[in-house]
Image (cartoon, rainbow, N blue to C red; front, side, top):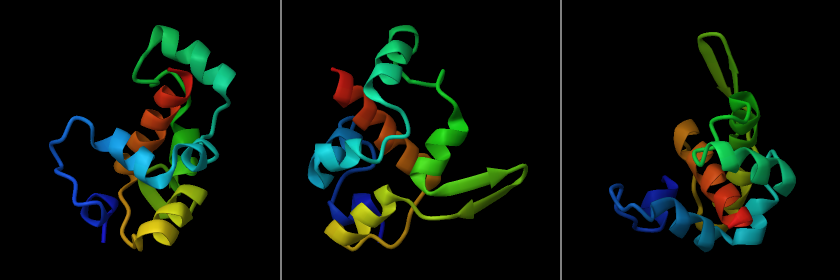
Length: 109
């Protein structure tokens, strides 16, 4: 089960990631972020999508290790949080990164 299924969220809901962060617990998700508040505050000034922060660190925090064409699930505190709170057993790299980036934006807003 994916987090969106566990929370009965519409895939097209523009507030989907905000709702996920709030359901998981903002502070708990903030603890999963791969960057501190100062780094995020600086980066968000020039790119609200936070694409100016290293993708590899987002991927690792999302629970994946990428090397060339290969991507391996390594687990993460975010994955553990989703599993513990909602029984989530299926994860998507891009979705996990989006959850983390939304939490980062919420942290500095």
